Amino acid sequence: MSGGSSVTFEFSADMGLRALMERETDISVGFYRKEEPTLTCRQIAEYRFPLLASKKYLAEHPAPKKAQDLEEHVVLLRYKTSPAFSPILLKRSSNKTSDPSTSIDIERLPHVLKGDGSYCRSMLLKDVGISVDVTLGVVAEEIQKGKLELVLPSWGRPDAPLCVYCRNSNSESPLYREVMDLIATEISKIVSEERALFDQLASRPSE
Image 1 (tube, rainbow, N blue to C red):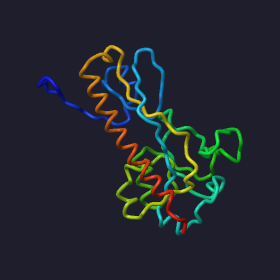
Image 2 (image 1 turned 90 degrees about the horizontal axis):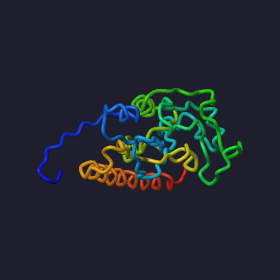
Image 3 (image 1 turned 60 degrees about the horizontal axis):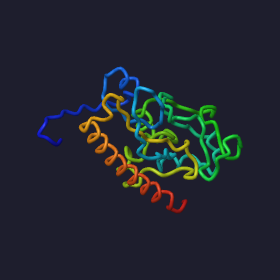
Image 4 (image 1 turned 60 degrees about the vertical axis):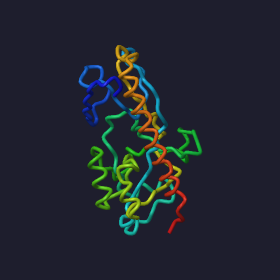
């Protein structure tokens, strides 16, 4: 950082805003926007959660042609610990969340397996089912190797506002501003790369 000061960063997964408010961490990133009077929030981007399955899984199970076909598949979900994880899948071309032809309650599907992010990634790569919450970045290598395919590309959870938070007492600090700027810049790059990868997958012809 500027000024010759020495700064140490420690990164922790799944800490959330509770840890920020209880001073267990100083800056948090979340896939949601939550108004808290003691916190300053900066929205970075809108994040898309795709549906993914392995080629091996799709070779053994007919690929879903419509969202209702997910009733015949194993669906991998993360535990609902984040406000980003809406139970509803939406068709991106529509905002009619009450219309059964353009939305589906994934938690009511008959074959749902739940776990943390590592569990969902592991099950996806073991050809167990269709993931809803595995981000493209954590499986980019497998995608580039042709092991994974996008499923129902026009469907997904509602896009999540990706935000960075700090406590109000630190919001005017030049150091905190610089760190938050750095986080926002790097995450924006990641989001752009994942959107390009999504578009690349969505443009592939169906086999």
